[in-house]
Amino acid sequence: MRNGQCSFRESMALAGDCLRTGVAQAFGSVDDPLQLNLPPLPAAAGQAPDAATLRTMATLYLQSELEQAGVIPVAELLAESRRKMELRSARASRKLDEFAERGRHQWYDRQRRNVTFARLFGLGMAASLREGNSINHDFQQRLASLCFALVAYQRDYFWGQRPGPTREAALRETARSLLFNLGPRQYGNLDSTARLIQAQLQAAVDLLNDPDLAAYFRVRGMWEVLRLVLGSGAPDLGRLATRGQMGLRLLDWLASVIPTLSEAVPVRPLLPADSPVYTWAAAWLTASGIEASALNPGNPRR
Image 1 (cartoon, rainbow, N blue to C red):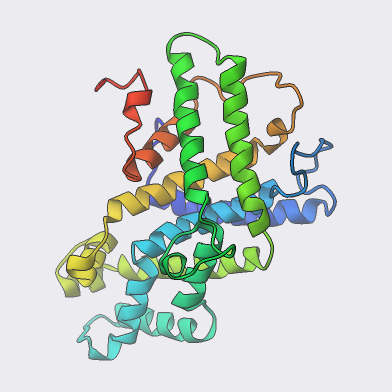
Image 2 (cartoon, rainbow, N blue to C red; image 1 turned 60 degrees about the vertical axis):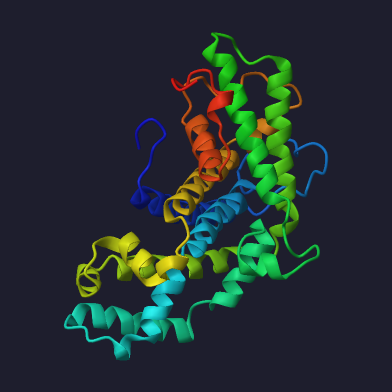
């Protein structure tokens, strides 16, 4: 990763790391998974997820955006249609068979995945079809607010200033607000759900990136396969992939500063001037159709 930029491969690796870190922390101490003797977060203490749970949610967020991009659904469609495909590749055929078999016996179907993503992040088909408290309709707005607060926080550094008390308080409160939004969503089998979907996602990526499968469609790589199969109904894959990767990294960062957010009186800025977190926040906003450059005096386009 350079200057806050990251590849899709790096993001998939980070998603796996988030799940492994969560297990290590959870078994490290039952009473204190972070192994830190710190006071609870103020205002609604006990509702915010701990770092391990938030990192699991970060992985699920990447999965949710890639679900909207059709990564697993297209792999499922190809696996269901494999008998009609005249593939000459034994390897690609084997991958399709294995994907179909594991889909029947191990993995979540599309409806269960959509319900999970709607409950956590207000994303997907289930979010548009369902109403009520089971859908997290506020998550996207709160994540956007955090991104705006981060871009504004960087602006003070650009002018050679340390962020003042008001800016510091605004960023910390926005971060806490996102944590408390996710707090009521942390219950249930989040870890096992994230692991099952991650295994399915990784298998789908491996399948769609198979060069023999791409050659069958006369294209190159997973993204071109997706565009071809989805046709005119294909969403903006670049936008969704960027949102997923940047959201993953933002939530992973937020998990790392949970102890700092518990400080009654901040002893240092929440972020240094050269943090890549600002790049992630601006990229998430841009991919969401929100222009962040106007808030960033360092942007040469201004």
